[in-house]
Length: 200
Image (cartoon, rainbow, N blue to C red; front, side, top):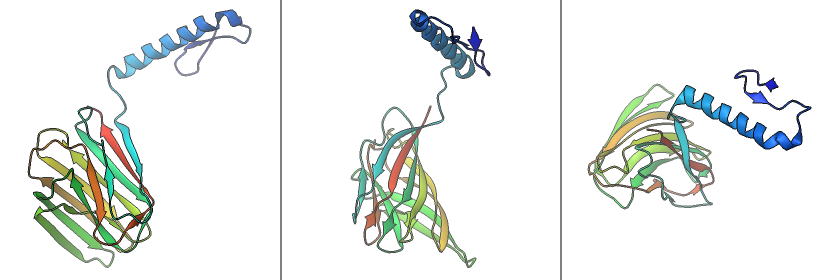
C-alpha cells in the first residue's frame, strides 16, 4: 500500500480495485482524524471568519449585523479597500447605544509630530480608523461585546499622512450583536469589513 509523505497515511495503489474505494476512503479519513486529534485535541484554528460585508457605493454608514454571538468572546474587525469622499476619521458604534464611549488615541504624523486625542462619554468611538480618500486600512480588536461586561477595544490605522493607535471602552454591560461604521463626513464606496472570532 502507498502512504503519504509526511504522516504515512495509507492510500490506495494505482492497481487497487475500484470496489475497495469506499473502504480506502474510510481508512484514510480515520487516519487523518486520529492524527489531527493527537496534534490538536479539541483546539481549533486561532481565528475564524464570522462575516464579511461589502461596503456599497456612496454610503453614509455601514451596519454589520449578527457579528457577535455566544460562540466567541473576542473579535478582530479588519477594514480594507474602498474610498471615501474625503480624508476622514471613522467612528464605530455598538448596537443603538449613543453614549458612554471612552477612548484614547495617539496620532503620529510623518513629519514627526505626535498628538493625543481623548473621547470622554462620547456618542461613538470617534477615532476608530481613518480613510484617506483613497483606501481604508485599519483594524479593531473588540473584547466581550456579546457578554454582559464592559466592552473594550484596541486598534490601529494608517493613511497617507498619519498613523494612530487607540484603545477604549464602552461604559455599560449591554450584550451587543451589531456595530456600525460611519465616516465623520462624506461617504464611503467599496471595500470590505471582515469580522473574525478568536477561538476560546
